[in-house]
Length: 228
Ligand SMILES: Nc1ncnc2c1ncn2[C@@H]1O[C@H](COP(=O)(O)OP(=O)(O)OP(=O)(O)O)[C@@H](O)[C@H]1O
Ligand SMILES: C[C@H](N)[C@H](N)CCCCCC(=O)O
Ligand SMILES: [Mg+2]
Image (cartoon, rainbow, N blue to C red; front, side, top):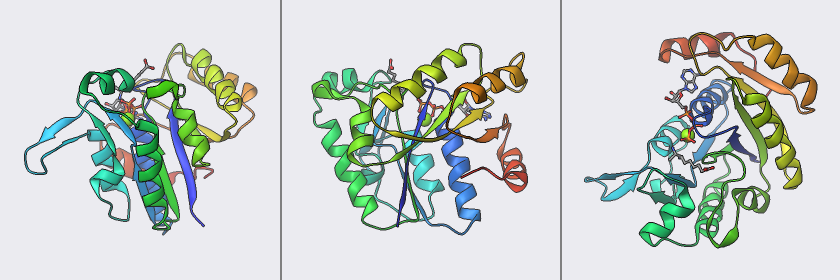
């Protein structure tokens, strides 16, 4: 049975892709098969060879998964402007974001990986077209949620609001990950972490340090035991 995980974050640039990549590498080390997707991406570049718009997050996830997948299933909605996706979609005349996302997700799910990870865009309450929000995709596909908290000043409010909104959406928060975005930890990192531990019922699954390069990431993976 496939474990289906949706990675959301406290904001855009909170580290969803970086953490997802590490999680995929960790599961690979555990001998698990993985597929990963970025259903909706804004900020895509034209690839002359493949003759399509491609997104760097989607390419990272495609490469980090153990199973191969068509780009169109990994990233069914690839929008060029690096702006809010529903506005980008309107600009370029694209529709059906929710339906295209769920169809691609189902195509990947039918291949029965041990883990199917999908990364959101921006934060939890991301607007899609026709009044839908990203949580609709998570609900329809019955994924559990992992919240990446980018550890910087302001993250307490963002994290607690997101946790409340996930519950309000009727989705299950499997746990959260504290992600260190800067080489030097934010001031009073431990106190901020403890504040979140005290107020979020779901478990802290891992603390991801600042990963200066690939080697630091590998060293961290070798020593860590995320509660996944
Ligand atoms: N633990 C970390 N160590 C070092 N750099 C990090 C870490 N987490 C995130 N970053 C860097 O911060 C930036 C934003 O991270 P990332 O792209 O993962 O955010 P995101 O939440 O996926 O953003 P988006 O909403 O665009 O998908 C990137 O340059 C990434 O390399
Ligand atoms: C382009 C950017 N890097 C992200 N992929 C999209 C972020 C959308 C945020 C929308 C919002 O909540 O205001
Ligand atoms: Mg990302």
